[in-house]
Length: 605
Image (cartoon, rainbow, N blue to C red; front, top):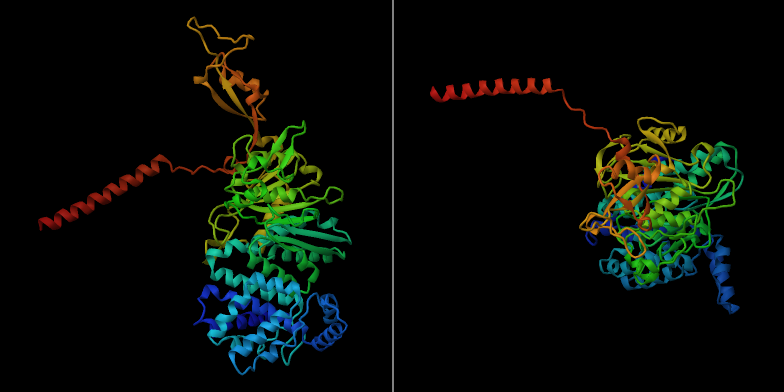
């Protein structure tokens, strides 16, 4: 089905809200009716042809006293879902009273199989029935969705073509996008701009496109929102496989904590005919209730919440005491066995999602796993040496997992204008990337939007996405691409002490002969790993010339990691030559003198 026809259907459904809901719901609440009704009508249309057989099978099962019927009924329907009520939407339009319509419509909803019931519950759709009955609009809404002017069935109807599962999924995604744009204050919570998602999918698959085999792959998003990243990833892998003459299947997995968003993701999978995939979308918090704990995945993408408190999860995991969170996803050890807790401050849990993905990397396959996540700048530099954030960076870098970090333009997202960064990780780095990290400054690669969408005022065109991927794949130094050894980002934070002196100016020692420090003169120094000669060379060159007796406390030395794009890509503003400035001032002075003379002349006249 072409884009024009798809857009016609979307516009028709969008118009139902204005036609039927305008005087009953505020605009921000239209989605509470339209999204679940779109799901219901699609499921209803898919089940219409097999409805008589399903009812016959139900009668047989009832007669035999069989209570566990859903498997047989879904099998009879030929779908991963079914409806065992005696109704279809088409025969609910002529009811003598609103109360009869309400009773029959509720019976119809109750007839859906448990997997659909969960979607309806998360949408909280039953809460809308009384409102629609009281306003006498339920019948009109149903009538609109079964109108001859729209066909949500997979089969042709009159002059209208049928909708395959992919087209239906596209329509549903477009409705979600429009509702999110209409509610800009919420859009960023659930929706990653499609241009960013497309770029992330390219970064996941492009580097290993020629290594794709005739095989089954898995893709996971632990903060899946409406499931858009999973859908794009699936499409991209299928396209790459086809271009290389390969046949692949891809299983999608996700988890989402927001009830309605979870319902949208699950419904979208079901609308595309992916009944099994819908079962892989889990509900709940990935941090405190990981529903895919035993699985590992080939590809992982995510846009986790950033700048958002995860205290509720911390309370569930260890009564709010971070030191007691022993989850192995967020705790590890150094090569010499030193504990390395990676628990960040409770005000921002985005790094935990990245660590969750790392814990699900495949270790025993040729491709291993590839991870692409988008974060804000906090993940790059927040946290002192030895903090959870710094330890997380240390773990990733010392295990050589980070391929690249890409700085995106500001104002790329709907609900934030701050800078964002794409992390690209792999546990199967190609040889030239081993031991190195590529930083890409893509902040100037953008196309202005004609009209802002919330905070979003720019986008990445297909050509610009290709350019970013080209820079990444080329792995070469340039004005926008810098390549560093992993050690570039590590440092020692040392405690510098000076001796406590007695009245004669001698060093004071304890009973064991150890020099006692003068606590009033304690200080700290940050020493880069790449400082030639290390800590002692730094002390000799940078500290002891000014404090001859200075020494460090080895027990207080901590290791830290941080990344700074400003450090490597900062371009100082080019100052104008002094002679140009003076010339401008002289010209301005002459102009001012002329104006003053004219004013004074006018006054005297």
